[in-house]
Image (cartoon, rainbow, N blue to C red; front, side, top):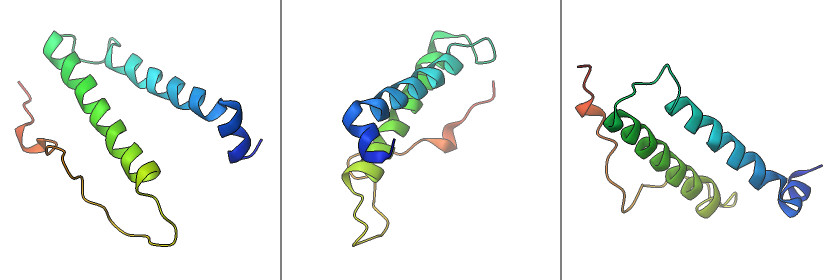
Length: 85
């Protein structure tokens, strides 16, 4: 089934949701820090990545005008605040 068929049948949506659920399983898994704050931060980061990806690849994708797009209206990812304690 091609891309259009997957879209029309709902298979693409189900695949997206399954992949998102699998990433959530990583966050709630034994190898991820178990504190409520760490889990919340894991889900917060995951949702930010989803928002950015949907914006970049669904809303702003135009093969006729390729280019870079700023994350307007989004906060930074706070990579400089990473704590290892």
